[in-house]
Length: 448
Image (cartoon, rainbow, N blue to C red):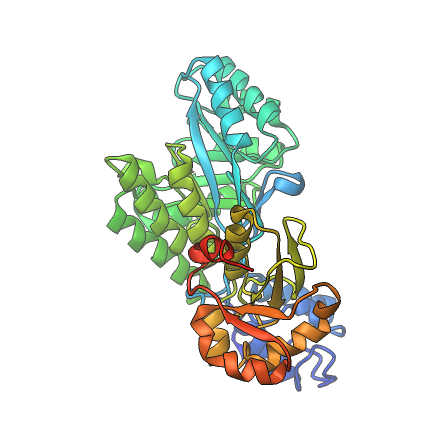
């Protein structure tokens, strides 16, 4: 258990210097106890106190890194159960499992297909985190060969799945220095697996059998063997059991500050599913509650993309919507005679409108108003997207100097502000556009 606020306060300098950002040392101690502050914020805490406070100041869920470079995956370090309390920070990685019993040419082709697939949503690129290579063959040399291919062609984080330490040792020789996730240490092999993970400075997954107490004991043994970066697999696969286990793990780490289970979690939704559709449903559950690594058995962009969209929505700060920079955007090289449309700077709104405009082939000016990231109706209801704001944006971004006409098209959902906008922009013609972005191409065909 962690220290209480009063216990932490006794170890602080009690100067009330306010340099930590809190009014008193007691307030700072309470923040530390609640995991809402970092001990490093206090410039005067003694080294002796730092040592005593290390456990209390550490994040309730350890931050674990899989892989290296700009594509590395960081998981854990979450501090809340619900995103409305505070945003979630480290989205789970999505891995595709490939087995070393596949024909090597097919394996290579799948790795390349997974590597080359990606999409962009609201201006953010999305891709598969990496592949999980499984030693289904049972042969160490074969496993090492397939892992080497994945390492060379993927250049992204890997999960190495093997129960035989000899196979794992051979695979780690191919990935030394790239910090793949070693899966998994069990009650039968944990000593050998922990030694390999420590030797190669790789994180390791600890797999239980459904008993969280046994999982905690096993994690403590692996930690005692010198491996700090641990990922937990409770060993449960059915949807209900997984939901219960993952929720319990999160609550024990956050609410009870139970350190032996204060690690991110890995799941295998396909092992508890009877079809690809059921796997996707269970993976969606794991994204919401509370996986750090999700290993899929199927790769279908039609399934993976919705999962990535869900992940992006859940791991976006609900108090700070994704937004684009306000300004005057040029689509398809507009001329001074081209139409002028206006909308908000909520990313989903912008990319929906911009995509339809670009798809129409009609050169267009698109004025993006700062609505603090709110959509059209939400911004209008909150007073962030009104006639005054639009008129100010027209002047702020020098729109009159870019176009030869005085016609502006507002979203159909806020048709009621057209009269007010005409007052704010004397001499301008305010036109009401479609209510939905999908109708924009047809509308632009009628522009004159």
